[in-house]
Each structure stands twice: as structure tokens, then as C-alpha cells.
Length: 453
Image (cartoon, rainbow, N blue to C red; front, side, top):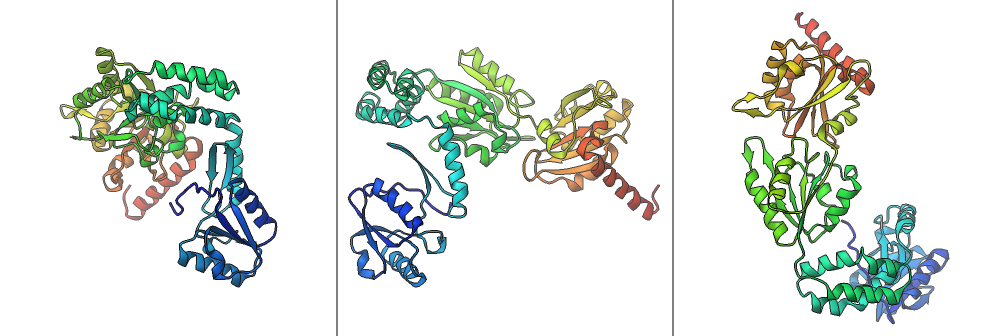
């Protein structure tokens, strides 16, 4: 983060303006609205900075703007030279004003036009009366702190009241009724309301592939219990002061046993906390969400399942592979590559049936067993396949070829990321068809050159 955002109190403080022109006048108008006293000068001298809170320049001779910037830096005075980030100690954002609510948007000086576009999008969704709602909270700030001295309890109360009747009345401009509704809610506020657990799918890792509900719940959660496959980008969507608890698992290396995770979720909910149990992909597709939901239901803890984009969908979409195709794949089968007692516990006969796409989760280390089992069930090992690592993320890699080739090449190709195997005729269809054919042709040519048939 290049620039640290701050809101500066300029009421009755002096601001130096150097130069002139439309750009400077625009900045001056904003500064006047903030209550600043403006000193407008046509040339610069160091003594002009005495008692000044900040300085802004535009349309002045180059040497004077450089001198202003250098002197301000030496004196610790914030300085802005319009459209000259190299001379700036601070930059002015695009502003959305709903007094006392103020939203500032910055692109670190790289594109003021983009900042204005972002501001317009926010303006379109921000309620015009949001300032009245902020003022309502301000009027009850001391009373709320006195009634609810515990920070977590106070936050839960405010989260509730800001989405309840008092908020709706304030946004509608019915201030007296809003005040009465807020006071009534505060009288009935409880120190420790019942907690709740949301089992949320984090999808493949990209934050913009989260559902809207998942994003909202992350912004409201007191604590986020997450797996290793949840990306930092997704975790950044959570509230800044939320508690984060890592319970990640890797194959044969369980950081926290499932029984302990279940007990942790129950404990956190009983403390009255709002819990997001965040899982890569979808909670109910090889995510043990069903086990956690059963554990919560058994002891009467309220919970909700929020689906996410599962790995098979994300991997296939980014690799250009249709999971279904009316000419060759009328069904999709999700299967786990995990072993039970050292063997793959799957129905190879049903998996070997033609006309389907197989999506094999967590099967990178058991590819030889999967290949042998399918072969023995009559499956054609020349069937198109794709092994996809870190699917749905910018780091996605794809190994294409026949199933036999993918199995043979996987040990040297795989790195550390989670991998998904897609198997079936559909892997050579769609936007992926040419890439598959090129991969097979290149390997065939290489084998011919070294005399292998």
C-alpha cells in the first residue's frame, strides 16, 4: 500500500495554494468545504509555510512547484502538486460526501479518471440518506457504549440495528421515529445473543468468484475458521478486526483433527460469536461440511450452508473444458482420489461407463491406482485427460494428453498445489480441443524421432 489513507481535520486551519487555473480552483472548493482558511499566492517563499497545515500547487512555474515540494518534505508538511505524483507528499482522492459519511477513492495517482469512475459506481449504490443513519449512531454513541461496554456485544448490536427498522426510518428521513426505534432496540439489547455458524464455500481462490452472500458474511463475521486452500485474497474480504483461526489439512497431515474442528465451531457459537467456517470450493463437495453441519445440529447450534464454486467447475472453465457435451458427455461424476485403508474405495465399473466426464478430486498421488482400476474395468486409457493444478487461480497449470500419458508424466510435472483430474472425451472438446490435439501430436512426433512406436 503506497499511500496510507487519512481524514484530516482542516477546520479553521491554514492551507497554502500556489499557482492558479481550473485544477487548483477545484481543490480550493473542496478545501473550503472542509473549513480551511486558504492563502492563495502566485510565487513561493519558504516563510509562507509558517503555520500552514498543508499546501497545494497547480499552474505555477516548474521551479516554484519543485521548491514548494522540497521545502514541505523537509518541514513535514503535506504537499500536493496536481498531476505530479513525484512531487506529492499526499494525493487528493475522488470524494463521495454524505455528511458525516465520507468515502474517498484513490488510484495512487495513476488514474484520476478511473478514481472518478469508481466514485460514480459507489454513488449509484450508496443510499442518499446514509449520512442521516451515521448521525443517528452518533447521537447514541455514548449511550450505546454505556449500555454495552463489551466491544463484541456492542458490535453485534450495531450490526443488527444498522440493518433493522431504525436504519430504514433514518434512511427515509423519519428522524424522530428512527430515534425512538434505536432507543427501543438499545433497551432490549442483550450482552450475549445466540451465536451462529455459516459453512461458507470460498470457491477456487479468486475473491470475485465468491457469492455475494459469502462476501457479506465475511464482512460481518467475528471469527473466520479457514482451511489451507482459502486464498489470502479471499481472507482479505473479511472484517479487519475479525479473528482468524487456521485449521488447514493436507493429505496425511491434519493440522487439526475433524472432531476438534467440530468442537471448536460449537464452542465459538456458544460464546455468542458469528462464525464463518470458510472452506475452499464448496462445503458439501468433499469438504466435510456435512460432518460439521451434523455436529452443529446435534447440539442445537444454528447454522447455514452457503455454497461455493467447486474445484471441478473452476478448473474446467479456466481450462476451456466443457464438463458436459451433448455429443460425448451426458453426465458428470465427482469422485475423490483419497484412499481408505490404502486403496481407492470407488466403484470402478460405474466410473468406466462411457458417455461421462470424471472429475477426480485430490487424486494426484493415487493416479496409478486409478489408472489400474479403470483399465481393469475396461476403460480406454487413450481417453483425453487433463490434470489441472491450482485450478481457478492465476497460477493454474494444465497437463493435457491421453489418460495414460497424463499418468506417466504427472510425477515430474506436479508441483505443490492441489490438483484436479478431468477425464473423458469432453476434455478434447470446446476451446480446449486444439490444445489437446497439439499436445498429443507433439508427443507422438517426439516418440517417433526416438524410434518408439
